[in-house]
Length: 444
Ligand code: HEC
Ligand code: HEC
Image (tube, rainbow, N blue to C red; front, top):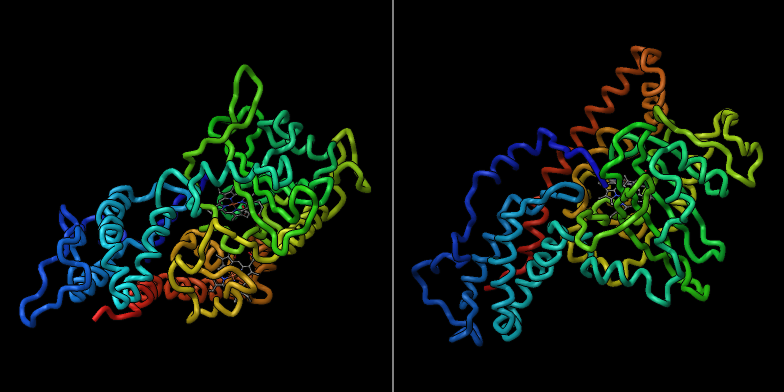
């Protein structure tokens, strides 16, 4: 999914600091020499082992230094990740942990004190590589499993009629209308506008959602991304699942000789979980500059010629209806794809987020959660935490900018300041929270 990278000002010191700092371990990834003074006891199995961390003190030093890095909390869900840091973490920190497997196993105290780091680092590596969706399984296994024989067929294969209608919004909307698939073109919390299409399986085993970045006639049609989310409710035979399972897939739109197609690659980057922490996302929950839909085949007021305008308020009605469906699924069963407990501490307690984002009502927020999405929710949309009345004002401002009264503007401004302050606090707490989480157990 494409997105304009966010560089909020409060992040700048961190980014600058990390761009010019040198790696803690120098070129060889070896910990600093143990401090002089009291004699240090060799750990069980350390002698002759390739593990460079031979004493509890060295473990403390290794874990503390790692935890101090400023770069753990930079998310890169939809942009380029920091490749040199990624490669350092992989060839140095993760390698040390792997080389030390025997020492860790032989020393229960070391096992306990390194446990969170040992779980966090591989998770972080997947969440920050340039070749995957960031799930526990690699893209090949993840994408192949979506089409396993126990899953409903075509769950992540969009209907041919939609593909044939690419690449313009007009044609795609028409195809959706004629086939009776509800859709909406709306402002997106990623950027610009998107067209959303909802295609339920005829046998009720899954719902297929599409988010398309479509062009107007004559616009640039290269690099169009066609994202699909299969929300699975039952297996192929119709036996219901206890919780929905999600199947994410990004397609590239291809073009050859005037006809369009879809293809997907197994090395595609795009960290779906980073933004979809609770599974399906709600579409921006208010009328925006574009909130457009028309009745589809089978509905009252459907117009096969497509020339009639929609009934009054139809776009908002459709928005609410789609959002009701998106919110009806509840939290998904991530199965073997995501181990939430390995993504670090649950964030946002001091900011009041955890009354909902607690892993029960709503997905927990972690350091893997997209920085840009938190910023959008809190600062741009003023929707987290929610406050009565603000959405109506934002809507009014968006649609009829000039008609906001002075009072309304000042209400919005105060709300903006409050949300920005809270956002700053949330962001500032992430690194310290992660550090205390990583270092909660002592090695000595
Ligand atoms: C940068 C954040 C971000 C990432 C990364 C991301 N999404 Fe989304 N996605 C969103 C947002 C926000 C929405 C809600 C609609 C909107 O505002 O655009 C959404 C909605 C969707 C929808 C419509 C159904 C729903 O849940 O609302 C689909 C389909 C979808 N995303 C697919 C994907 C796939 C596939 C991936 C990974 C390959 C992915 N997304 C990664 C932010 C993201
Ligand atoms: C009263 C409950 C509640 C509180 C408190 C709350 N949220 Fe949410 N949050 C929700 C709901 C419901 C959604 C999904 C609907 C939506 O997107 O508007 C959501 C969605 C989100 C999302 C998009 C990912 C997702 O779960 O769909 C982010 C990011 C988010 N909230 C961040 C925050 C932050 C940061 C805070 C604290 C400052 C916070 N929220 C406080 C209820 C809450």
